[in-house]
Length: 275
Image (cartoon, rainbow, N blue to C red):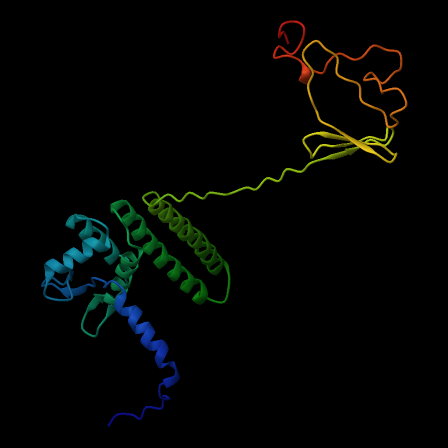
């Protein structure tokens, strides 16, 4: 007579989440899996978990990212050396669960070639060492150097695993697509307004011409025009039309200034274009 089961029943409110997880589980690629069979001389050999050996070997090669069966069997044998042995009541045998777990880690990493498969196998070994060192560090007495040394070893192994993960990511990114990001920059042009208070003139640089506004009742708009080369520019009118015009030199009695370079010919001066 079996013992009564005191476990509570399954919560049916979680059933939708289970169905979604089951659907994702079915979409995942299958792991090849292994089976350990005892030979006549007491050794153990790796066997497929089903009768179709050829299909299993293809799946194992795909898991290690190689076409070579020799490389696939070498990787399997190296993973076999990482697992523990346990006594099943009759003899010591390698742990199939651990070997299948390591093979699943390699299969989930999806190496693309033998080089990446080597790195993934090393990552599996680093993971095994890290977990064993952590277990020994937590169960090795009540303190002292052994526990401290194992804790430091665990930290170094964890950093090594992170470095291996970054290296694998870089190796995989070399064969990926190149993404180019285009950024658009917006430039705003602002116009500057210059106000001249002394002469009562205001120059608006936003407009195409120049506006001279007097303090009197009227205002006059003067367009920016160039004079022929060699001739002086016309003087600007003052704010009062009855008074003398304002000299372009700024001083009364002096000769007008030479034409501006903008108003000169293509040469830019009287020297025939010499600069």
